[in-house]
Image (cartoon, rainbow, N blue to C red):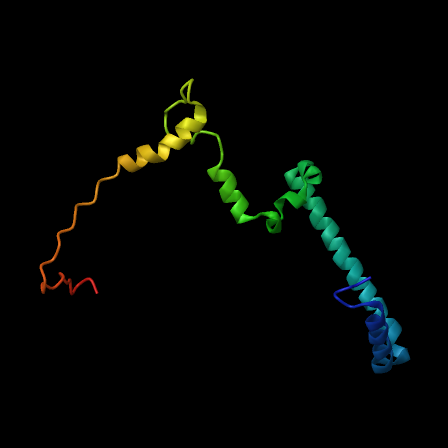
Length: 139
């Protein structure tokens, strides 16, 4: 059993040090204060849980909190699932055709979006020895 990363032998050593430092007269008093502190912390936690249940409802008791753990999500898997999703994009009034289905629409959407972009003008070649244009305000 580990409590705050302390194993049994370390806990025993800490107890012996407490007996030596506090002395046998004050040790029961401090042990009682520690027990009261732990009880009050448990009471605060139970009260907060009950208040949350009252405000949010009984669905909190049924909620699987492990699903909300951010450590279980792999960004690569999320992106892969989003890219390989067979559903049509939510934006756009287009409906899937009977022959192509939503997969064909999803595949055609990026091509249609790219064709709507303005084309880049072709760059002219500089003559040999000619300096490239320089904009002093841009730097």
